Amino acid sequence: MDPNSAEAPPPSPGSPQDAAGPTRSKPASPLEWAGVIVLLVLAAYVPALTAGFAITDDRAIVANPRLTDSDGLWRIWFSAESEQYQPLTYTTFWLERRLWGLRPAGYHWVNVALHAANAVLVWLVLSKVGVRAAPVAALLFALHPVNVESVAWIYERKNALSGLFYLLTFLVLFRFDQTRSRRWYALAIVLFVAALLSKASTVVLPVVLLLYWWWRRDAWHRKNLIASAPFLLLAAAMCVLTVWIEPPLAEGGGAEPSGEFLERFARAGWIVAFYVGKALLPYQLVFFYPRWSVDPSTVISYLPHVVLVAALAAAVVFRPSWGRHVLFGLGSYLVTLLPVLGFLDIYYHQHSFVADHFQYLPLISLIAMCVHAAAFGLEKLRPTARPTTVARTVTPAAVVAVLTVATCWLLTWQRAYVFHNTRTICQDTLRHNPDAWIAHALLGADLLRSKQTSREQLAQALHHIERADALHPDDPRILQNQGLTLRMLGRYSDSLRCFAKAAELEPTKPRHHLDLAALYHHTRDFERAIKEYRLTLQCGGDQSATVHFLLAKALIDSGQTEHAIEHLRQAAQLNPRDPRPATLLEQLERNQPQRSGDRVPQKESRLVAP
Image (tube, rainbow, N blue to C red):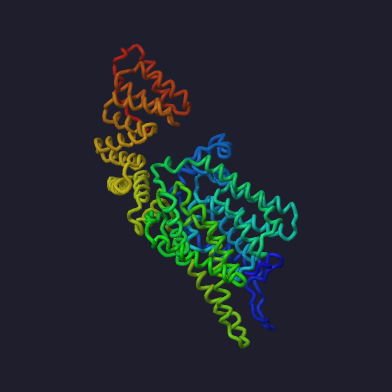
């Protein structure tokens, strides 16, 4: 890497490094390179464009009231309803919900388009920095199979969107570096704020920026430190806001703490080694990787740290030549990875300490280092004699680049098929990680909620849910789905046990009491059903109208018609669009002369599923 290349335009991408002869081919223009990158991205992600919603897409898009309610946009920006504060990302979902509703193709197209734009920006940024073979590095980023999780999974829009603003910020700062114009500086700050509002992990940008300024001039300059101050303040503010808004890990559904500092430190080294390994050899990629256990008392636990310190020490020794470039590249990689190295508890850590989508931005630095080093080494292999026209075109570097890019394209295309829906993701996960309890739980829930659920499919769902319960016991969500499956199979006593255990673990969650009430109601235990319906109302929730109606039905079935009338009125008032409470209320008022103890015919009191 040439530290002075940010001041002067870099060589045209694809131009030979040796002396040019009269037959030298014309290098590709920037527009042509951009077109190649975009077309290859679109071709690689064709399987994702026909995929559906998967995993948490239902919670983020399909069943997210903030995307449909009249005050939803206000709540996206000024409430703490979500587990993560990413208002700009959810604003894009809000807009798309109005453009193409619940058709997943539109969301997938936007994700792929953002990723293609990011790949072009990676090429521009690396060209400005002076990375050799920057177009090849951009293509590897665009087509690396590790990035499929960030592109084909709609929920990870935050990665692609924050990456767009992150890379644009650096491009604008390069321009500011040349002109020292306040307009470029102000635009960089605006873009950085947009990156923060898309995903909080972009808080590392100011540190990477300081590393870049040090690398360019091999020294710290006062003007650069001053220029970075607003970025550091914005990053600090976002850290405070994130800690305040995001719930503690222990409140996120039974997540386990990540251990003491020494254990986290030991595990962090293996996390770095894992990500480097998957970047260099993207083999057996899994959506849910095993959750490691690292013993901080053993020497072997610190082996990655030893290798890393040795690499940094060598870079310091050879700082006058190649060492400074390695310090910048490796330092940028580690800094960008820092938010996901396990020193801070995040919700995903209850499943695994690593995930492919965690290294979307860090991957850029690693690819840039590897491509630059490979290009430099392959240039040394060129023959000293003047090459022929064919030899100048088909160089060892070109052959290696084409084979590597083609391999990545094929792996990405294959990996994109895995993200067709929740079922395909979980089935692929279980082939590689059969003890992933969350994959068993999600697969069981998906089979349970299928539109056409046969008894055989219910048996498969129960198998996966029971396996999830064995691997991760006392999870209320798993118990709830287990109870629903057992109820659908007619095993009411076993279903009652699961619902009761879930209600015991989370006594303030209305859903568990509603499940118990519906089961008691179905088995004609009206007294207990009425009690559980009342407990459901006490716990609150957004189904109060439905619960009032079901409670009224239970009261009618138990002969308490007078008490049912009030609940029917409340149900009709809370949800005027539901005609059932008003219809039943009209029938009761028409039959008012009958004694309060008389039973309404069973035909009118049939159970309505919650």
